[in-house]
Image 1 (cartoon, rainbow, N blue to C red):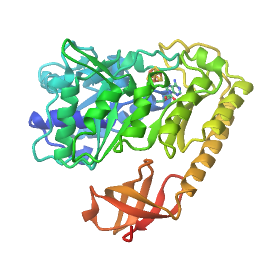
Image 2 (image 1 turned 60 degrees about the horizontal axis):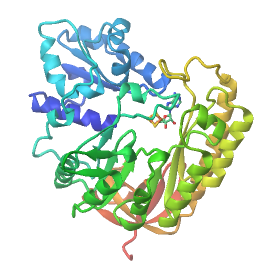
Image 3 (image 1 turned 180 degrees about the vertical axis):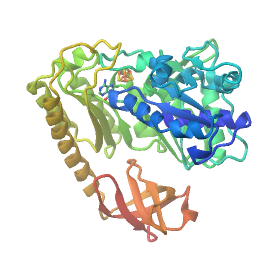
Image 4 (image 1 turned 45 degrees about the vertical axis):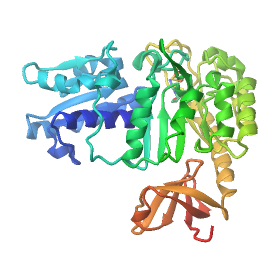
Length: 428
Ligand code: 5AD
Ligand code: SF4
């Protein structure tokens, strides 16, 4: 979502007469978009900011802004910690950026971490007419979270769940497709909790999917991130009925121990999660399942962790993300007695090893077969392009740059830890 937000911020700046430059050395404004989800991500910002000191000495006009969830969570504290910062803007106030910047002509600092009543999406401009979209584009349909998992800052930094009106989403989706998008990923912290209700219409996430796939020139649709408790029957059905919906589901579970799931306030059990995966696979047997895991949540015993490994073996993930628990200020789990760092490190290594084995097995099965690959960008090597398989794996192949934005048949020849290699399969 930060990638999407950064795009909307740059659209706003361009609409207000700014120009985007590739090199921070030549910029008059630098905006850092930040993440507060784990301590490591949040701390990164301060080391990055330190590097701008020399730039500010060279160009006294330079304004430095901090956006995103660190800005939301820490507010003025960001400026106290790093006085180089001129502006702090939370994720709900990006449409106010130009006004905030012009205020800096008469005042020293500008901070906005409100959750404004006006619809920010209505106030964010659409991109300039000639701006091309990448073949695969993001589109935020829902923001915020009311789930309050005990470890998570999102409900505090992104606020409560808000769903955008379907017409606004369809307008943006059609616009993206006209600019060259072939694939769209619908975004939301709880994307499948999407629910729009007005006096004239109501629309849930499955209905939204069914409306977006009707855009003829759109070839592929994805969504992320989902919560197990919002995996409705009609959403699961979409995997069986909607051909454009790609066979990939990122469904975080966090732990395989019911005791820990309860302490995390996840509101689902291990069996409930496994049953969802079973039902999704019934509709789409080849689907790639992805997940998120936290190891070392306060109170997690070796037995609890073993249950998480057991769940991984049961689900058999195509790929997954796993993290060491990181206490976040203001969350219910912060301050609880922590699992030792040594245990966390050992558990993380163990789960990552298992998940990598599962990923390799998933990739190995693809070797020798042909898949439709959406070509998205140039590769690092000359004459190389990179695309994505239906299962979201990066695929490297030799090919002309004219293939950009096309879906082509590629025969898979080999795999590495994170990607596939193949060649154009002209026969099929
Ligand atoms: N510590 C570690 N991982 C976290 N996540 C969220 N909060 C924390 C935390 N405090 C992970 C969860 C979530 C993903 C986006 O980040 O696994 O699904
Ligand atoms: Fe955070 Fe996701 Fe839980 Fe919401 S559902 S609190 S975003 S982990």
